[in-house]
Amino acid sequence: AQSVTQPDIHITVSEGASLELRCNYSYGATPYLFWYVQSPGQGLQLLLKYFSGDTLVQGIKGFEAEFKRSQSSFNLRKPSVHWSDAAEYFCAVGAGLTGGGNKLTFGTGTQLKVEL
Amino acid sequence: GAVVSQHPSWVICKSGTSVKIECRSLDFQATTMFWYRQFPKQSLMLMATSNEGSKATYEQGVEKDKFLINHASLTLSTLTVTSAHPEDSSFYICSARDLGLAGGWQETQYFGPGTRLLVL
Image (cartoon, rainbow over all chains, first blue to last red; front, side, top):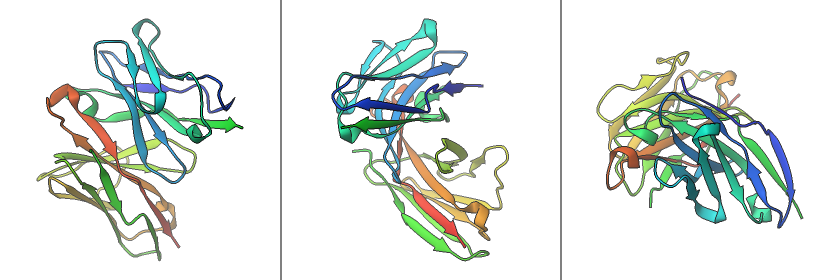
């Protein structure tokens, strides 16, 4: 069975600082990986996804993530954080013949706080 | 594109009543939709997979008779919480699978804004 670990429950960074959110996955085959962001009381917005190809994936809002098979990781990064980035971030892994459309397994999330 | 809506966004009901939540894909067709439940400060837990024109597939531990799912069209799935009780209070989120232009590995799930249910 697939699983996702987000080791950091809370992260606080200063506005303008760089950010890296960690995500480790467990899956027996090539994973389909996603990062979603959730603002308080809202649904999830897709930031980026990895299915295959270039292991460095660019997303919306200036985010990027790098797939490292050897480390089973898919860490999310942003060079300069804005106050509006404060939210909950979820990493997810999808599986099956139909990739991300199949069931998603989510990590427990990382709450990002941005200090002004 | 790829917008998913949910209605209502908020619902408060009395214990023992039933509540219906709608999930719509606004600009794409979704043969498959998913229903998740999220407790405060926790991750999303998949409840069931809703397939258009067929019965939903429920995850282990989810009561089929408690959470009725209907996927009558390619753009609408409904979740009905029957005989709701306070322990059913939660944030319910749906997602819809967008097959994309190429289908297959291009599929991605897009999420609705969620429905907060409070059962008194």
